[in-house]
Image 1 (cartoon, rainbow, N blue to C red):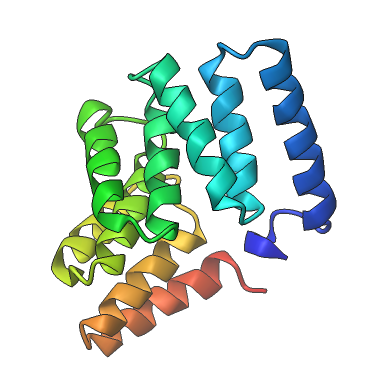
Image 2: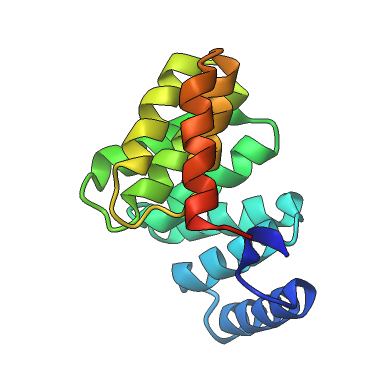
Length: 168
């Protein structure tokens, strides 16, 4: 079960895709609809379809932080982490008290990890896990980065935190 948020991931993803497609069909000028469709494509591992939707959302509203973060996330996983960093760090700079700062910082950490910029990745990962609503994947990123830096005791502590937050 991806991330453990649903018992039926394929069914849930199909429902999300249908709802997002309907939202875009109802209002093609709504950036939130395009973000929703882009995120659904991303979660379905269809990054090639996700990126244009997320770019459209940003064209419609260049200040939509969630679109910027989602595009950065998709770019990291499509092999364009250097470009992703620009989107992610801009999102964090322009919305430094965002409710989703932990997730945003975790995405920036992933992009720097992909670029093998481990110290920068570590800074972002530490910011992520200091946020009050961070979930277990933030600690997974921290553990991976610490492992790359051969800081095994700290990586083990991050792994312990993952298991505390998600014992299954």
